Length: 233
Image (cartoon, rainbow, N blue to C red; front, side, top):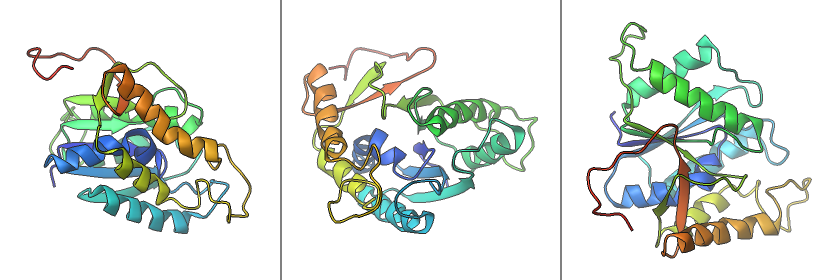
């Protein structure tokens, strides 16, 4: 299956938090979008890997993506080695995305930075035909890194006006991870009410910077070329 956009996250819920509104907008505009989670989030303090599997499925249904799969790398311990790169190369060649959305190269959780860097390397290697996986070589046109915890300066901001509520709904599908007064499990940095509220105000703040109601920011390695000035806010 070829997709237009492949959104990759180190953990289930990374895509929702980092670019959930973007995914929802692209789906609504007729783009074929898929999600790949690198780990099951089994080291998470709250819930369990099995529960997060179901939460991830629920969130994917809310966003309306074509598919969601998990490559089951070890949470916290996957590396930039040949085994992990080859697995991601197979995934990229399987879905042949034009655009990949993935974790920021620098972030609070070590898996986010590792995941973003691993995707960058695998996407390049995927274009080398002498790496044999039984698939045709494929390299995406663009890799965009979404912003999650650290308030990094984006290279560009996508207008996601009208899709913030869908993003919030998809995030809250991960019931065990976010604010819930009835949950008696230990608190974490993302289970606070403040963090839940930040999902909205950070999107609105990015939107304010480009004169829209809501936005999601992305970073790139290298440069983003444009053909003309049409469509630029």
